Image 1 (cartoon, rainbow, N blue to C red):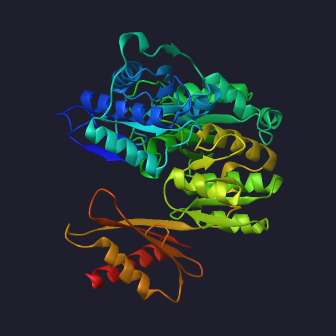
Image 2 (cartoon, rainbow, N blue to C red):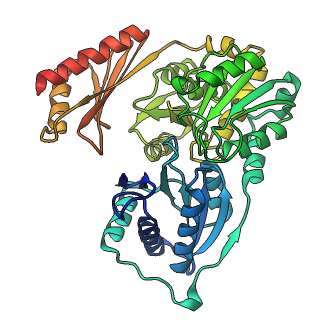
Image 3 (tube, rainbow, N blue to C red):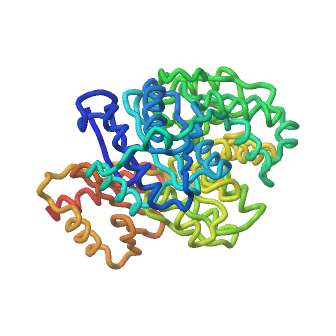
Amino acid sequence: MTLIKSISGIRGTIGGKPGDGLSPLDVVKFTAAYAKWLKSVSATIRQKVVVGRDARISGEMVNALVCATLSGMGIDVVNLGLATTPTTEIAVTAEQADGGIILTASHNPKQWNALKLLNAKGEFISAADGAAILKYAEEESFEFAEVDDLGKMVEKDYTAEHVRQVLELNLVDVEAVQKANFAVAFDAVNSVGGIAIPALLEAMGVKNIVPINDEATGQFAHVPEPLPENLVDTCRIVKEQKVDVCFVVDPDVDRLSIISEDGSMFNEEYTLVAVADYILSKTPGNTVSNMSSSRALRVITEKYGCSYAAAAVGEVNVVSKMRETNAIIGGEGNGGVIYPASHNGRDALVGIALFLTQLAKSGLTCSELRKTFPDYFISKNKIELTPEINVDKVLEKIEALYTNEQVSTIDGVKIDFADEWVHLRKSNTEPIIRIYAESTSPEKADELAKKLIKDIQNQL
């Protein structure tokens, strides 16, 4: 059993003793702590919270616990039931709520679940707010409401509203997509994408839709992270069905991966790159991604005479840097597209609508469009250390070795070379250093990663 408490929420495997796994007692305790924090920062007399969940098996049970606990704390609840993460985020602002809770363990397997916490803007809470909630939970310093003050609960479906907002974006061209007469497949890994994606595609006038793993049962048809090694069968189906494009999402639909018409992966890193290229071609502006994302976004941004900035890993950090730089598009290389014209959160539906528009206007096939972008390849590695090793000291020594290069210490150590980079980050939960290296070929990326692993070992 596993239970991980962090500043961004609580996640763990279902079952086990309290404190060992994500037990009902842990769900109640953490929800109550969030409710206490919300009361401390809210200017309203009576607070309102939006709750949405993905389709994983434990979702109904966890949802009932969360909604009941919020009510018990005197907070009104808007229960969305099955809803994507971005749908829940937009519902917070649409409902003028004080916050939101998303019940999803994202790409983790079915035995996992999590509470992801939102503020009144429908964005993930800050590190300081998360630390305050953790403290309340540890102290169990919360009081439940008396009977006359219990919160009320209403049930609403926001999928249609989410789709409506996506279609209203200026750069989404429904007519162009209709004229293209695309055959579009999607793999929803048997979660809420099976509800939201066909609703979007139908609204965009796509007539030929090929659903793959579209039943929202929570019985994930494959490992739910949308990576090439998990999508072998999906790629085969795409090629056999002769579709123009296939969209693959994770269980909560905030990450978007694309498969081309020939069954080849578009590459998850290039979801953001492609969408950014389309947006910048119409409305030039600044861009942001996290430090472990492909350099291709910077290349595309500079092609349009605009500025790129890197943020620490984590959606809340990317959003903060986007505000700071007034970026018009940003996100993460894991397929996370953040388009502020819609809202400040990763949103696969926004990514799908913009990419379909781009594909329709380009007159190219999906694989041909991919070839218009510069090729970079990332090698992802890690090195395990003994618990007594001071990881921060090791990273400081590596930084000192590369003082002649462009080095950033915003988030671990990132070293930028002329045509490649390497990013070293320590894990928050175990004694390891994650090593991401990118270069112009897979072999060069692996070689760079091995070089840094050797440098680290020499410092131990």
